[in-house]
Image (cartoon, rainbow, N blue to C red; front, top):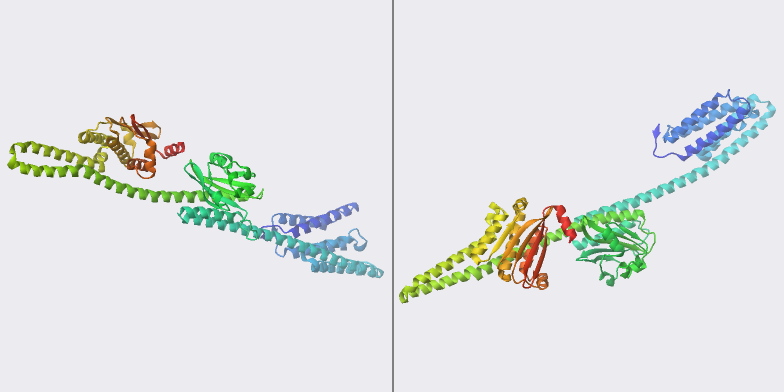
Length: 578
């Protein structure tokens, strides 16, 4: 006994016809009051019931078909022989094995079972009937053989149609399985390609190419020349076409705001948008390539609160984006987000590395300038005065003492400047006593060295919660802002304040009462890498995931604000607000 994955239709046809014949026999025998004495009929009912259960469970016996035909032959022969044969009510019972044989073994099965029934009929005529009946018995046997040939031919046609349908279904299943394999291969290739490259442009190109392949892997149908696709990414506050298929040159130059229509819905809702009137969209309708399309599917490239842009697909067919294709595009969109995020992170690392090298180079240049403008000039002046003192020893010795006092003062001032420079390069007090002590020490040295009044107001509890690395960055931000105010603002007072703004977010403020400056002009210089102070402030703010805001009014001073997130959730909220 074996179990199969699917039922055999021939078994169900044979069982159904057997039930029909058994029902007819039951009605005929009941009408003739012979039902109670017909025990073979009850046995046959139990047998067919067993066959029905086995067919329902997809179970088959060994030599299942042969056994079924033999049982039908035995039953029909026994019933024919015991129920008055040619003169009884069940003369036609031989049809049962003939039908079974024809269904299972086609023409040869029908002829063979018909031959067995014909032999039984002839034997009955010879044994039970008078000699004159042999001719009639032969005619009945010939009719039985003819019925066997007829039912065998019908069984052959039925089996051929069943085989055709089965082969057709199997072909469709194989084709569907092949398409699914192609889709899986496309997905695997997509994931492999997108995760194997960190090149930003290559990621976008691969996403579009593999999307077209995954949409319809059947190579017999070419639709790729009709699919319009594009990757739109945010650059500032505008969506720019970074990669596209079938976009014209003019289309690739269009900048979309992403605030209305399909783009606005996808970006604001964070969900994919299916539409069937893309040509009339207030934003996408500007594209020449999309005017020939009817349906479109727009997928937002979004992770958390960060929206990189959208994946856009369009097609002239109104019902092209079926559920299956949309699911495939959603999967590609998710893979593309990961790849784009990785590529951007890698690009950010490269840029960060370049910025660190640039910052280090600028720090060396700044140290060289400070040494040249301060201690170097003073030491040169000390050397000149020492030479003057040597000459004064013989010509005007009474003035030597005063000149020595001046040289000593210059040396002390130079020592303070050098110590201040060393302090700003590596404030050891920051490591030993924390951020508040380091800022207060910096304020004292500013007052001692340059006479600059600096006030410090730091929340001690907040400062203790900050990591040591973040404390160092905050210190250098404050030192840079104070130094800029000292050099350029001509301020009599500079205030440094660090406080909690809301749960998970703190605020560093450096405020002065100096002359102020034109923020727009400085911002232009910043874009050209011309304002080194602004560059340092902005880049160090980015290092701690913060946001820099500067408010300056000519004649009224400057207020530098750095919003510092203390948790990842606060960082997401902060940049989402931005």
